[in-house]
Image (cartoon, rainbow, N blue to C red; front, side, top):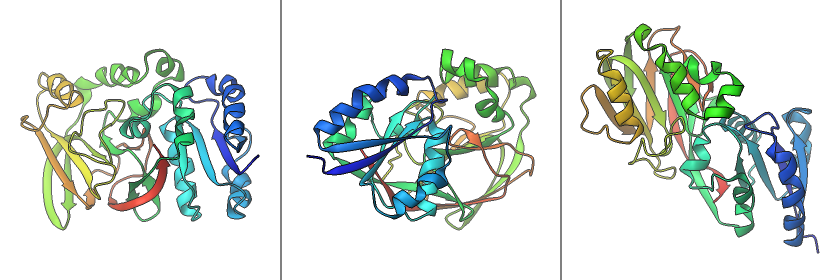
Length: 294
């Protein structure tokens, strides 16, 4: 007996084409659990096409298969349109930061069956300038374009390290910049090389950067690398990527609910690995804003 309907939204350009073969495996399993899956390919239609279905409550839940950018796009669309349905994530991208912060299986097939357990978690979301969102990270620095300019072929072959191989070629041209941040009402000034805000433990494919962070703690976590020599920077980055920066020179860490970040207008910014807006940015946490299957 069919009891429920889930909408499966997928981006076949994310990661690999494995979602196409996976569909034939997961559809019968869901059907045996009384759930009909309706696939929707983002590469053919657009998000407005499925809005009437969601508004009319024809679906009980949503599954999203894609990378961090696709997931951010769809989750943001759901929030903008007040669609309050539980969401399952099938990680198919390069870094899969949100999925890994949630502790979901890295194997997409295993992740596809997580919603069948019906265990849910309401997580915090970063709100940007009152009209945009990030679900894993917001970061800024002059070598940030490596995260969205890296060729797709490189990302498929060497995953998140493609970003850092490309970024490493920019080390000698990294420029420090003046950064002003109001953190929960208190002004702080830095001469920085980069900054990153996170909702959970993972940023850019490294899952133990922010050990103190939790997706449900009502806080955002900020770390800043201050100006340092080119000889020091690789060691600093390595220590950050293995979660060892709390007592490290040139690194500052804050946990708060709201941030106002100001700096150079041309500073590259990324939201969940995608090109973002220019500074200044007003950022705050929206507590337990969206519900995900875990």
